[in-house]
Image 1 (tube, rainbow, N blue to C red):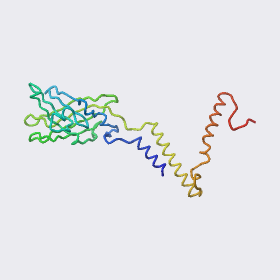
Image 2: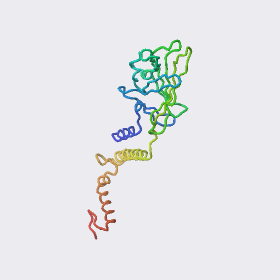
Image 3: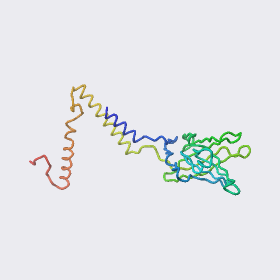
Image 4: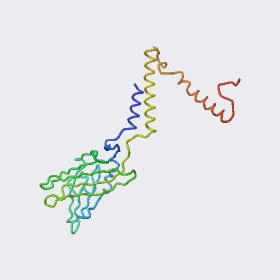
Length: 247
């Protein structure tokens, strides 16, 4: 049984993903923790040229200065409306918290979407929300906001944002080398289990003799050494092989 447990553990290490990962509909992995800035740092920011509104955001943690400038201390994205004479007339609005968010793969594209909801009321339009679309780009690509859409609802108030971001993604498909290792490991485990059962139930062997071909494996190291010296002898022209006397 211990061989089965070891095999399952190793395979799980090869193909496992963490809780902050999303597998897209096209088989790539987005690790959200990779793009979450330490909360001691400044957040990502983006300025909408048509309105001069500035947006600060983080991925799966609160964003600075949203956590101190808005009523939501866990705000992941907030809007700064610059005033005529800042900072007295500037206003901050939270557009969602990481504690009130959900993430899923985009069904029709190459990426994932995180939706954030805030706890602050947006007038009669409900709560402010953000839909952050993460699109997979080439590995090594830096996180880049390609567009931010702030539709104006009734009364000219922005209650829903859509943020489109390019991020690097990595493939979750296992390469040929790992496939070979997994197959080799699986075959080895099956060989040991089936061989042991046959030796135990059919041949009525006990103890170490249950292990399949135990005598071969006990001498395996010596066979390898003899093979090395044999090849060395062929290369160097020497006929000396340890353990054997030349006739």
